[in-house]
Amino acid sequence: MAKMRVGLLFGGCSGEHEVSISSAQAIARALGLGDNAEKYDVVPVYIRKDGRWVMDAQAVLMSGEPLVPEDGVVEPTQRIPTAVNGIDIWFPVLHGPNGEDGTIQGIFELMQMPYVGCGVLASAVGMDKLAMKSAFTQTGLPQVKYMEVLRSQVYSNPCIFPKLCDDIEASLGYPCFVKPANLGSSVGIAKAKDRQELEAALDSAASYDRRIIVEAGVIAREVECAILGNDNPKASVIGEISFNADFYDYETKYTSGQADLAIPAPLPADIVTTIQEQAIQAFQAIDGAGLSRVDFFYLEATGEVIINEINTFPGFTATSMYPMLWQASGVPFDHLVDRLIQLGLERTSHKS
Image (cartoon, rainbow, N blue to C red):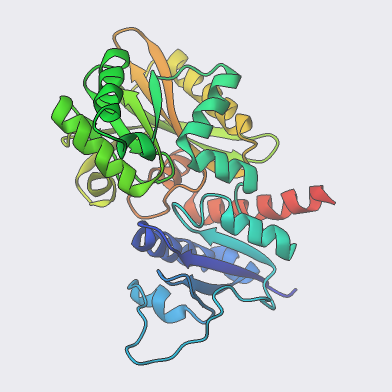
């Protein structure tokens, strides 16, 4: 029986380029283990930071280092290949914009190729925090108070910007969190504890995105649940993150030893059930497929569970919560990536 050729697509035009390489390395190793080695051939395809596709990317996958253009080398103008031969299914290991946001999924749809993970709609809604929160509101999921801010308001005349900050202070108070609407892995996020920090955070977020979300801060435990499946998704055990940083920023998330993970999290049984049920509800609210990780706040003092966000392609690095949650739920890493491929093929077959 011929092996299935898996196009492992990684890198990409986002601030999470290096994380994508690490995730791809872990997935490639898992596809070479046990039964997977007999079922799959990995075809590594790399997207450089400038958007150019590198079809023979084994060297990048082995080294773990981003590929940069060579000085003085004239390259073709074509970025995305018009045809890729010999790939049976794509495994897009792309985090953040230009990969996790529905753009690459749209390319696969146009190519009529099966792929792992969420489709165009779920990816786009899952990436845009404001669209995500609207979907959650329609489903009745509890959320923290938040406000939408546009870059044009931040970069407005001296009369409008102070009024904007006044409105945020009156509605949300301090501390509050300022986030670009369309970036992942805590990129561009800042915690504001006073007016000066709020103004600086808004200015910083506006440099990343034209749409910004400002959320009220809460005193809570940060917990996460992994989802696996298509029409009948399953929820993993719950994991908890604790850290000494002011909040779970990019450096804390991807630096070994900066955060402690408790899997499974020490939570009351009814809270675990609530989180799992709401995680599946959030996944279905955006029409998710394959995988997602759903993040929550648990307000221990009141017993409330509040949804934070959904990540439609969470990290697969050595310190990533998603594969660790499934490992603790009885699904080893190599079985997990095999299952994701099968789910991608299943979803494609159900479209016909």
